[in-house]
Image: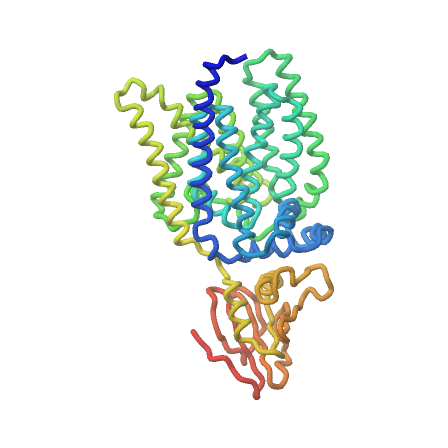
Length: 495
């Protein structure tokens, strides 16, 4: 039992830890909500909310029919939408998961590697441009980062014999949540498997105890696979257009996106940052045993498996499936800063130099994040096009939207949230104030007397020739064109 003296010594430390965590979370929150109220939902996000706004049973059916990802992310967003449907509120869902990741890194990293590592990792993750970008987007990647941290935590606790029952329940539920949130969620299975195999090879425990923990872990993995097989079979039949078989520039670009985000940065800065971080992580791997496994399992293995599948089976290379590695990049950099202490201990400028390195990394990340916030480009300004049509279209007009999923987005803003159910027979049309919104190319027969037909299309959409269409407005790559009957008024064209 602790004496009163020891309690008095511990109390300020606990209070200081909580204050540090709160300040880091506050910094992360401020960065993530800055400018968020002015951001519209873009194409991918509008697919998220279209699915999430459906009744739960129809949500499952709709995701199965129209989406390459499993339904869990959309299910939790469905619950979130019960409390609001504004763009800001919807995006706050990802902010919420990102802040939980910051807090989790602080706690998990601190318990496993020390309080200083946890605080540095949380702070670096709060500043990572990639993490900020997906904290501001209504997609599943902020959730995946959060789940990835806890899957690592539960795996580590289970293998090293700490809180085994809690760790077992957490590992099964967390891994299944990850697997059923993204189509490439299987990458986490390779990560935890490599972590467990490394433990079996290197863990400083008696051989019998080591095998006992490993067998328990293996049994849980078989249970997880049993529940994952239905989706895994379906996933093998799916493909998306934006994945690729990468060459060296594509690999470097993806790694630089994970480090520095989506801003317009000089190529030398992206290449240089990748090389410097790789050198730091390689040095840490070579010099520090406890952190070696986490770097190998949760950074190197997912990248390597994605490359292998892309070359040997079919292309799946993309930065998004690797999003869950970003918290571990932050943790790796934090470990490198703290583990540099012995190397700098003999130098009089050791402590200032160590903090200077951390400050330099923070400045680079902050500048990259600021550049990203100012320059990030989202194609197809769907909200602006829908609001323009609300003002310009008159009762009796028809609005055709060439792409079916762009139609979902235009309907969300033009008619209202939840106005389209993709599963219903009438899913290709909606009505607002006498204006009919339809999916597909415009009617070759033309508008009825006294009315106009509008066509919303992307420059990439394949359309039949329409000589009588007049381009009215362009919203980036989203075009609004018009064709009116002779007696109808025309909207003045702009370029």
